[in-house]
Image (cartoon, rainbow, N blue to C red; front, side, top):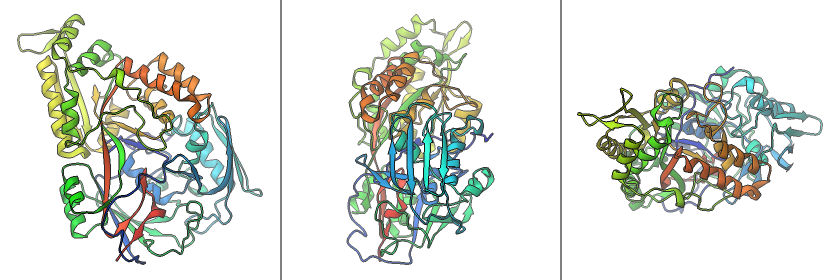
Length: 531
């Protein structure tokens, strides 16, 4: 069995990014968009943290998946408007339990050997087998899902282990690796077995990752032309933890692209640089409900949220541009766009929060810290260091409010591998401020229900029968037909204060001398380089 830790991390411009969108939001601006297309260039993109393992069967860390986007092809590409474009497959049929994909001709692995229907089917079956311990099980591939390849016909037939409203989008969007590395986690951790537009040529952890374009790659979305001008010959992912440094490198032309979500965002927009816009959650609290944790008590969870001025925190975290979420799914195609959160966002009421803790038996001591049955109300909050100064300031606001409430609270900014290790291995946390970023409501299910680590990805140990019942009802309905049930599922989480989203931003990736579209990372087939 593959270990889940420390390979899983949560981003969202600091949390988990699991999306199936290929097209992303329309780009804006500036530099490069009106220039002269250039061949033979290297596209250098900043990443804020080392990705750790690149194994696409294991990692749900957004920075790793953004690199995998360049290395591994998908059966289909889901565009921003929810439409489906060809990838490895040029035709398909699907409902909630079965799907059939017909592969394009001439598919190859990075070593030039054919990529067969049998290989593709083995990828899907591997993930669907619980014995292999992939965190994608229940997320994009339902437990017990299997696939059969017919090499002569070039078809892959998938049988889902249980109904999946978005079977085509979910299974169609997994990264497909070469058959030779399916059972080789060491090779996959290094990005080997590429089926996509690029292959790994050099890997220097905590420094940079260099990829080389494959001459034989022709299976871009729909009628993508591999001979068109402006495609990069190589790609470098360069680790630069500091956003201001990344901004300076971008403005000087030393790098081509960088995600910037903090105050430097305005400086880049004022400079007129090309950028994308992706709606992304940045403010979200998830509470550890494992036995023995104070936050297993709903009264404690409700008091903690009521003690916070979420409006103020939203503006701080979003550098003045934060918006109020409408739900947990933010990224296209996001088929269910109703506001399911509005009735559950609490008003700031510190007095009510204090009274609620009193009623729950947590009494303030002479030092101001609350105790119950001789135990102090001691909590630990973790959040992603990738949020930078805005994340630090927001965490300090929460810490101050909770100390005033009588909580012995510590907060810690952690990098992605440490975040993963804490949530999925040690369990030494009470509040996570690292949000989940998803494009389909079904992707939330394994994080808010089912087995806990190490047997699953329900890292907060949530057991909510109302959520599970609504998910079951929704999963039996195709696509948007189940939206009312998906909404009811989310509201079951809000009603128990298991999770509380409070801030979104439009996340921008800026570029100079290049343009692209972006969904779950930059789409490699969309990159165009300019003089």
